Length: 328
Image 1 (cartoon, rainbow, N blue to C red):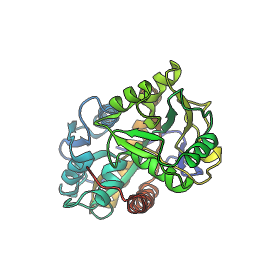
Image 2: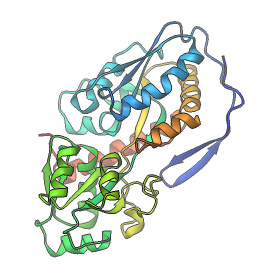
Image 3: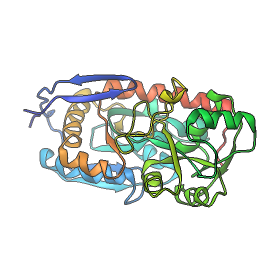
Image 4: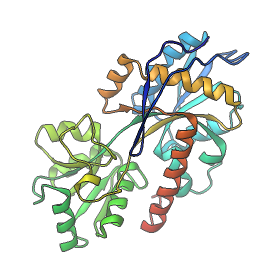
């Protein structure tokens, strides 16, 4: 089978946008020749699971074999990454993972049996997801610049919540602290929901929250949204500026998802998987489904995604080192 008559694909990479024209990609000989295992690096109902289940039926229709979603939650995405890294390099095991398992955890946890840049082969971006900088309404700020001024005037007084050390919200906050030269106290929680409950109650002053957790509370007026952490504005909260455009140029913390397979998988198989996964995730019904979860579709070539994984690995390794972050 091949990929034919598909529309041009808009690819976002940092500040650059390219338009990649579709070309026919023939299925490699003898691939697939059995069901494909599609690992989602979280539990059923999570964002990665939603992505995998949205596109797996479309892949199965093209492959002529089942595409079985296998939820492998654990170790902040490292368990799923380890399974994928040690699978046969034949393209029959693919994984949708997030920032943690694909770019952060090796810098944060000791004893992992894989390295994302060595043992995993990039296929494509899947989605981009903003974190949202939100504050309790009692905090007397209505902009990022006002928050920076307050934090500088009261070093060590403001507290921010997160769903745990090393998660996307924690890293976004530490990058913010480094770039603004401010001192705020981290209060880790066991999940984003408890952190949001305490933010609303005023137990912490701010959170770099996931969009699905923050948006309902912002719209209900229970918290105040200041900005989003991605390089461009979020379609979910289009009226909120980015932190970069709010006086902190160069700031970006994207809670992205991407699809990978085992390193050593032949290039024709990777290119074919890229073509079919990109086509599946770009369909209007999948894009609408994911948008409803606060996820914006973001696709790329394998080479572009590999380069981005490398840049994110290096970026967050430096943040973790400079901020002295440890997993606890």
